[in-house]
Image 1 (cartoon, helix red, strand yellow):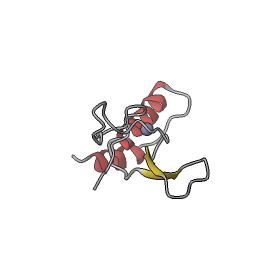
Image 2: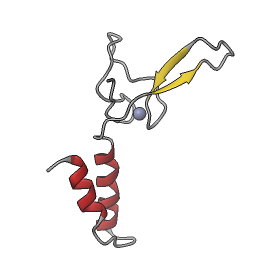
Image 3: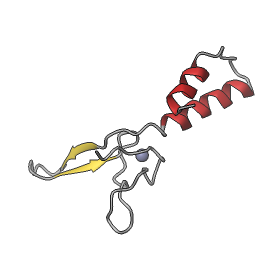
Image 4: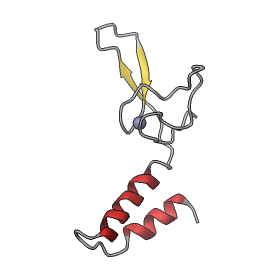
Length: 86
Ligand SMILES: [Zn+2]
């Protein structure tokens, strides 16, 4: 089963409010959503220099989407969001 198929299945289940099952359902949905690759967002330099841009995580806005060797990371180092660099 794919991540999206699993998410669809879980989302269609009845949600029990204020139960451990509801908490587990929410945590599972949040974790699985991070497995669906999203393209990084482009941010402009906040110091008014229009030509300078940089990429950030589409989920949390972190700049830590590169590995220590400055290579593009498959996942955000802060929140775990899968990154689509294509
Ligand atoms: Zn992130």
